[in-house]
Length: 272
Image (cartoon, rainbow, N blue to C red; front, side, top):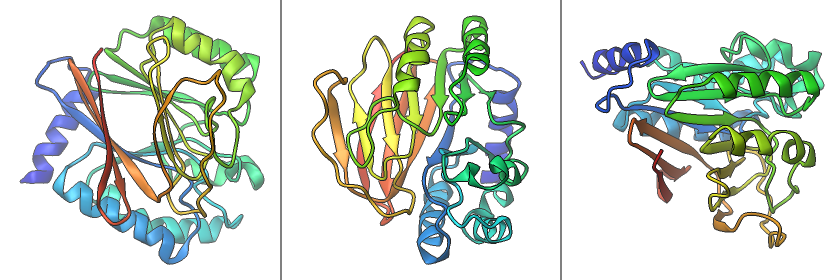
């Protein structure tokens, strides 16, 4: 009965209901595709969390496969995350830099529910903009501008692999900062979800946009360092493996960060 109720909520959400009573949620994980027991630990903990707190979607933040082997990728995925579709969740996401090393990542698209490398999905009061930060070019940027300008969603969330702001093993992606950040600010995007840096970081809102980095899905962790003064203020940073849970209704969005032991290590809330 629990799953039937969740599927009913999902169906209403995908039909575009904007009722304040409609609450939708998704889980997000990045940089997890290492295979073996490490990937299975992440997938297993997400499964246990989802049993307690049912979700509509599983969102993948990129670097879904480090093996460079399509057959191993499929096997690792089914062992670690095959439960998601069996439990009634939709699956969708983006490609990271490691994903495009073999056939441009095309072997991942079907299994991970990606119609192409950038696209949009609507879930209740949320519109998700899935972007390909491996190719921050004029064509994709024009598409993004058109999609954002025509969106009437209460919540606009952009999902892509390379964060514009991060202070760990990587620095922020300057192409994303230059081309996309102005669009996020101009068209009312409230939340950015990225991976790439193997840790967890959350930044204070800048011009209405909150930036969250979580690349702690299973690959080796990267140490955290001090952020440049030009960045938004970093308000939370964790050297840990884990995942995100995002839940939204018309008047509130809640984020929860969970480590691979099942402990909540951060919470945040946004208002539209």
